[in-house]
Every structure is written in C-alpha cells, then in structure tokens.
Length: 172
Ligand code: NI
Image (cartoon, rainbow, N blue to C red; front, top):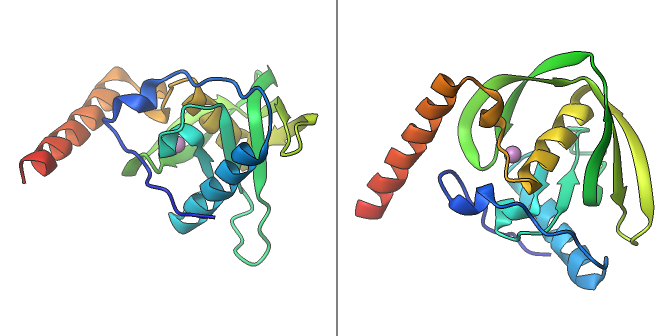
C-alpha cells in the first residue's frame, strides 16, 4: 500500500468522466488499497480514483467514522440505480476542495449497483450518511463536484478562491 497525492481544485482532471473498469484484477485491488490508505490518512470518509489522478470508475468509502472499527468499502463501476424522492441535507466537504464545507441536498436513500473487489456484481441499499457519501463519490467519477449542487453565486466564489490560491502558489 502507498499514500498517493490528492489533486485539488482547479485541477481540470476533476472534471473528467472516468472510464469503466473492464476487469477487477490485482492492479485495481492495489489501487483500492492505496486509495483507502490515502483516504484514512487525509482523513476522509470517501475517495474516488480520479482524486488521485486515476480516471477509472473506482470508489472507496468508510462512513463508520470509527478508527477502531473500520468498515472499508471498495466499489468498482458504482451506479445509482434508484434514488428516493425524499431528500436530506448534510454539510459536505471534499478532499479535493480542502477546508470548504457547505450544505447539500440529495436523495436521502438510494440503491447502488457495483462490482466488489472480486468482480462480483452487488447491490446495496444506502441511507443516512452513507447515501450522501456514495452519491458524492459517484458524482466524482462523472466529473461532478459537490459545489455543483450549490447556487452559481456560491460555486463561483469557491472556484475563484481556489484559482487565485493556485496562481499564488505557481508564482511563489
Ligand atoms: Ni469529494
């Protein structure tokens, strides 16, 4: 396992629509191990492969938020196949948009299909925090960020702030 570098706004790769995984092999399993290590280290509760600059439809999640009872989830080609009309609001953040948090409204429950780490097709019902995290991560592999769910005014303000910071860094 290895720690990988997390890319941040305004890196254009965060806007890529990622490629489906054809075969869940050792390379994909090693990728997911690296992603989990990187996510726990950050620390975060979800990470999409594109956040470490790998444009594949791979996601890891641990919404348990308990260090001594970890529940790592490895999802390949995850897809929302059903979402409730009922919504809920969570304050979201993103390792690729550090230190910015905002309330986002999403379906409060959803059903997700995916391949597990052996390549077996699975389905899971999600609710609560897990429903929000899984939708946030599936957004990532479609090039969508949580700030896209905010008003244009709020989004523009964040994008501008990160663009400015990146410019300062490249000059320094
Ligand atoms: Ni994120």
